[in-house]
Length: 140
Image (cartoon, rainbow, N blue to C red; front, side, top):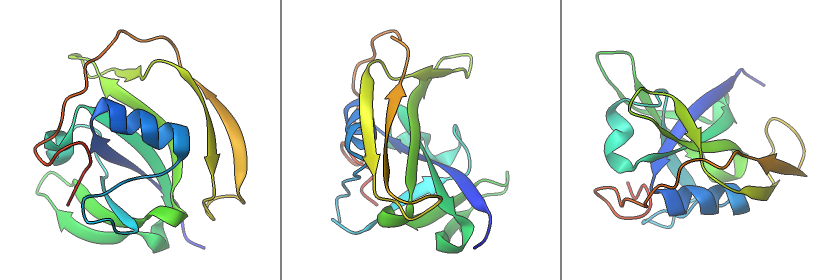
């Protein structure tokens, strides 16, 4: 097993809440992979205002694109990714957790066996869902 990677998937607020609540991603192509970035606020910002933080084994991440500032985009298999949290960024760049309390059940094989866990996030300021340029999901 290789190192874990912490990566970031951009989407709209409603889709991010659904991903955290269910541990399931939906893509336009209906594939078993998602696109993620090494940067929270880099090139992927055009895909939505919400960020879903995921963790995946580096061996499972396939490099898709690289940028001069060092940002990298990967394709990751959804059944190997652990959903960690979801948030938006304030104008100052601070993470603002999505409001609500949810239970996440994730059948990821990395980094641990399937388990249920409670994720409690603070009541953040309400945000309006904003569709990215490709609709409510990443859709690449």
